[in-house]
Length: 248
Image (cartoon, rainbow, N blue to C red):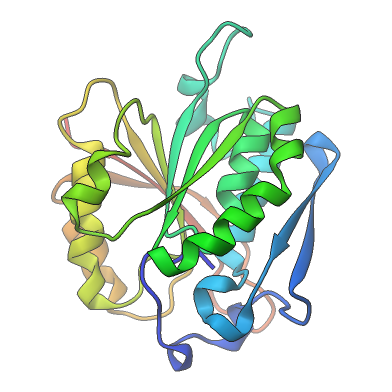
């Protein structure tokens, strides 16, 4: 699961968790006819599991690769699309990467240079997953790096912000006390930089309090919905993908 900081196990509904029976999950990316291998370590906490917002984002990246003109992600990604082999690669930083599946899929489907980030105790598994998929990613022109990042810490952000085009995340809005640190990190990454940087976030609403995060976000960012998944069986709402850009 993508997470900037670990969550309490009892605050997450089991219905939103992808099958964790096996430590190794195979995830097929049809647009590149390749399979990603993702190691989960469920006993180590929720940052080491696959969750629906991450896999929903992977599915959208897959569909964008197949048909970039008719995808919910077209608005966000079309301005970054490389027009030739000489074009610079898209540079992406993923926040709260968890298992890293979304960032790794972005590297493969977009031929992008992606840095996966999470708390220091999560980076070892992130490196394992990055290495396990390095050949697939490289085959399509991408590259994956791993770095620790604590939300709200300017020093952690400083080394990651050079030449960043896109910030990516899934399932990172949960504890209320983390809203401000996450927003501080987003401000540091997106505001006052050369060029236009955007934040793309897949989110599954669980609690009413999450509206506080979006209310605060809209004070500094334009926040738009770019896609809504159909709800899973037994759920009332599906994964929603948001596009954040600095208010002009």
